[in-house]
Image (cartoon, rainbow, N blue to C red; front, side, top):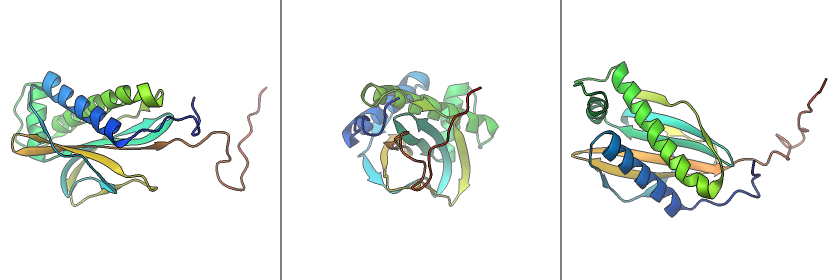
Length: 183
């Protein structure tokens, strides 16, 4: 495993390219839906005022979170394309479909970035559905956000990564690393 000092820096353009390629590929190949990429930007918070947000954790030399967010209407369209059914409102199948789309997109982003940043793993997706919520990542890292138009709807794909802590340092200043006992 790479340490923080060995981790190759990821830059904004690499992250935007990985997000763009992964998102358009999943929507095109898996869902048969066309997207138009908007201008990428950075922001301190991720999330929506209302709608659906799927979060996937990333761990390795770089750690953080990837997310996709959209309106309930777009989520129903995505689930309909994926499951070949019609959905008028958000239910468990729609939320599961969005979780799977997030897993595919963030998984493809991870695969693209591993060539630069080293091997990484993904968590199981978490999906949030509701109104007036916002997510924040502890620390000073910003989210790289790329909006995509899908007809009249917008899907946001975001990524927030930071170098993993060096395992050779103490967990907290003044505290020694834990010891392993072998028998």
